Amino acid sequence: MNRSAQSILEQQQTFFFSGKTLPLKNRKESLRKLLSAIKKFDSEIIAALKKDLHKSDFEAFTNETGVVCMEIRHILRHLDKWAKPQKKKIELFLRPGSGTIYAEPYGVSLVIAPWNYPFQLAIAPLAIALAAGNTVILKPSEVSCETAKLLTTFIETTFPPELVAVVNGGPEETSALLALSVDKIFFTGSVSVGKIVMEAAAKNLTPITLELGGKSPVIVDESANLKNAAKKIVWGKFNNAGQTCIAPDYILVHTSVEKELLRLMKEAIREFYGENPEQSENYGRIINERHTRRLEQLLIPAKTAIGGMVKPDCSYIEPTILTDVTLNDICMRDEIFGPILPIIRYETIAEAIEVIRSFPKPLALYLFTEKQEREREILNAIRFGGGSINTVILHVASSNLPFGGVGPSGMGSYHGKAGFDTFSHHKSILRQPSFFDHGLTYPGSKVPLSLIRKFMKYCFAGQI
Ligand code: NAD
Image (cartoon, rainbow, N blue to C red; front, side, top):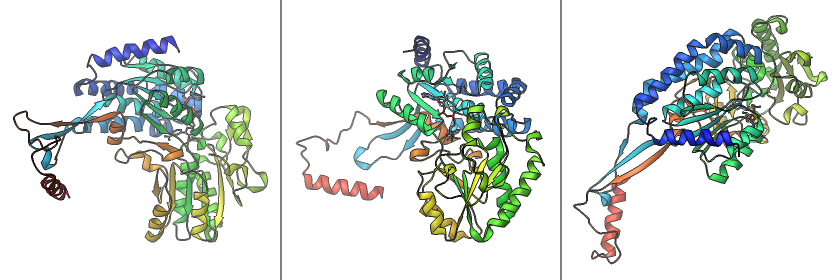
């Protein structure tokens, strides 16, 4: 076991048991410190994100610092209500007495972040973990190395290590952290590493949240507003050069509207990124050469309708759309996680549903339709983490909508109250006075069983 990781754990455990993370005043103070640090480090954050992923100032704000600040303000507004003990009605046979649920922090939580939104996906879980009263060991992704450096300074100058500590490194260092007996693990990353995390958590039976990925489909049916669909899909797919966990992975389009959709998507690409996206301030880069080469393997020149240019040494891949794609094509094997968008045609909606069901449950699903009946059909037929109708990605932006996957795309959720619950254990307490004891629960009770049966039936009928 990594000794320094062990000593961070012990330091945080001692701090946690001192009770200093419990008062809401202290938690709010931590959140306010986070907000002012984001303001203070704004230009450094933008610079790091530019170096790692060529993010524009606009994307750095809308996808990283802006959303995090919005979430922190939402938490500050609602924390008192979320943390308040909840009185619960209790059954007649338990009275006199009262029931209360207390949201208590787990203790020391480990937050492991990925590289694609390296600031947002480290700081948003950190904020809600602190709001719930935990201490945090934060492990940024080593792949987005500039942001990892920035996060280290950001955290070390904002919080004492007994409250928040940063540990840097790759698989080896993360494995050492996973071997620690922490009280909660919150992991964002790939399905394959998610399995490693779950296996490690099983050793200590540590509660976990897994925010994973998968192939998120878009359905465009024959009734869809194509102009709306084209713009939104292009934005959602090519934002951050396709390196978004809930980016549209592939399109299922009704045969009758495919040509028009393609024409409109071409127009939208030109409108957002100009004639040459490589020159555009608004178009990102692939995180590194290894991932660029991985993505290059997914291209099919004969099926490339738009884009297709790759420059591995500059980590550049043009916004690319593939048509006539089938399930046998290599781009349909795993999550693409880059700016390559395959289109598959369908004739009947049942065919589209069958394609989606042939993959593990996706993290997101998007549907473009003007038919309410279609909405109902798709929502009933397919299980997935969450999604949007007539738009993409934006379900993630509401603090009132829990965000997370299901099964292979993840377990548990966060954002707003869902995040507070994710980092809290809900402790149920029954309080009874000592002056009265009806004695019904004891063996050999003087009350006949038939009467007890009647009483219990009456109690539960009252509940329903
Ligand atoms: P990753 O799983 O490779 O890495 C995530 C973290 O795990 C990093 O901090 C890394 O250091 C650590 N790690 C890597 N290999 C490890 C190992 N063998 N043992 C222990 N730890 C290890 O993921 P990534 O490449 O950073 O991110 C891309 C993936 O994350 C995609 O699949 C994407 O869909 C998913 N993702 C999901 C969400 C979400 O909110 N659901 C958000 C962003 C990314």
